[in-house]
Image 1: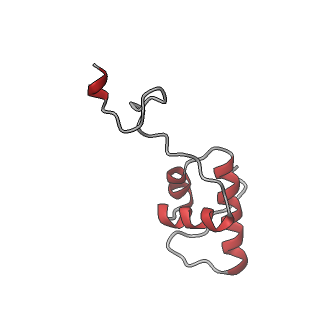
Image 2: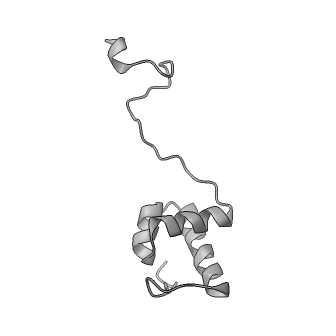
Image 3: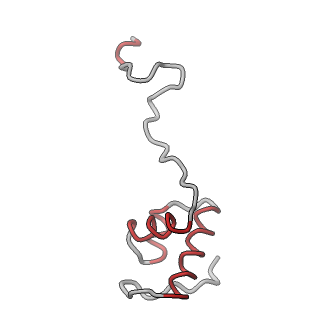
Length: 83
Protein backbone atom coordinates (compact mmCIF):
# COMPACT_ATOMS: atom_id res chain seq x y z
CA UNK A 1 0.00 0.00 0.00
CA UNK A 2 2.84 2.44 -0.71
CA UNK A 3 0.74 4.47 -3.17
CA UNK A 4 -0.69 6.71 -0.42
CA UNK A 5 1.47 9.69 0.54
CA UNK A 6 1.16 10.49 4.25
CA UNK A 7 1.17 14.22 5.08
CA UNK A 8 3.99 15.74 7.08
CA UNK A 9 4.01 14.73 10.76
CA UNK A 10 2.91 17.40 13.25
CA UNK A 11 1.08 19.33 10.53
CA UNK A 12 -2.59 20.13 11.18
CA UNK A 13 -4.95 18.52 8.70
CA UNK A 14 -8.28 19.97 7.60
CA UNK A 15 -11.07 19.19 5.19
CA UNK A 16 -10.47 16.86 2.29
CA UNK A 17 -6.90 16.00 3.34
CA UNK A 18 -8.05 14.87 6.79
CA UNK A 19 -10.87 12.85 5.19
CA UNK A 20 -8.36 11.16 2.88
CA UNK A 21 -6.11 10.25 5.83
CA UNK A 22 -9.10 8.94 7.80
CA UNK A 23 -10.19 6.79 4.86
CA UNK A 24 -6.68 5.40 4.43
CA UNK A 25 -6.33 4.67 8.16
CA UNK A 26 -9.66 2.82 8.15
CA UNK A 27 -8.76 0.83 5.05
CA UNK A 28 -5.45 -0.30 6.55
CA UNK A 29 -6.95 -1.03 9.99
CA UNK A 30 -9.66 -3.19 8.45
CA UNK A 31 -6.94 -4.98 6.45
CA UNK A 32 -5.33 -6.01 9.75
CA UNK A 33 -2.87 -3.26 10.73
CA UNK A 34 -2.72 -2.32 14.41
CA UNK A 35 -3.39 1.18 15.68
CA UNK A 36 0.21 1.41 16.92
CA UNK A 37 1.58 0.36 13.52
CA UNK A 38 -0.64 2.91 11.78
CA UNK A 39 0.49 5.64 14.17
CA UNK A 40 4.14 4.88 13.48
CA UNK A 41 3.65 4.60 9.73
CA UNK A 42 1.61 7.79 9.40
CA UNK A 43 3.71 9.89 11.79
CA UNK A 44 0.66 10.58 13.96
CA UNK A 45 -0.02 9.77 17.60
CA UNK A 46 -1.88 6.70 18.82
CA UNK A 47 -4.65 9.00 20.08
CA UNK A 48 -5.01 10.72 16.72
CA UNK A 49 -5.26 7.42 14.84
CA UNK A 50 -7.73 6.00 17.37
CA UNK A 51 -9.88 9.14 17.19
CA UNK A 52 -9.93 9.14 13.38
CA UNK A 53 -10.90 5.46 13.33
CA UNK A 54 -13.64 6.12 15.90
CA UNK A 55 -15.03 9.00 13.84
CA UNK A 56 -15.02 6.79 10.75
CA UNK A 57 -17.26 4.29 12.54
CA UNK A 58 -14.82 1.38 12.43
CA UNK A 59 -15.56 -1.69 14.55
CA UNK A 60 -12.56 -2.03 16.87
CA UNK A 61 -10.90 -5.39 17.41
CA UNK A 62 -10.34 -6.64 20.93
CA UNK A 63 -6.93 -6.02 22.45
CA UNK A 64 -6.18 -9.72 22.80
CA UNK A 65 -4.75 -9.39 26.30
CA UNK A 66 -5.26 -11.55 29.40
CA UNK A 67 -4.22 -14.80 27.78
CA UNK A 68 -4.20 -16.56 31.14
CA UNK A 69 -7.97 -16.14 31.43
CA UNK A 70 -9.70 -19.22 30.10
CA UNK A 71 -13.27 -19.20 28.85
CA UNK A 72 -13.83 -22.44 30.79
CA UNK A 73 -13.06 -20.79 34.10
CA UNK A 74 -15.71 -18.60 35.75
CA UNK A 75 -14.92 -14.92 35.56
CA UNK A 76 -13.37 -13.47 38.69
CA UNK A 77 -11.83 -16.72 39.90
CA UNK A 78 -8.15 -16.69 40.64
CA UNK A 79 -5.78 -18.84 38.56
CA UNK A 80 -4.24 -19.98 41.88
CA UNK A 81 -7.56 -21.42 43.01
CA UNK A 82 -7.37 -23.93 40.17
CA UNK A 83 -4.15 -25.54 41.50
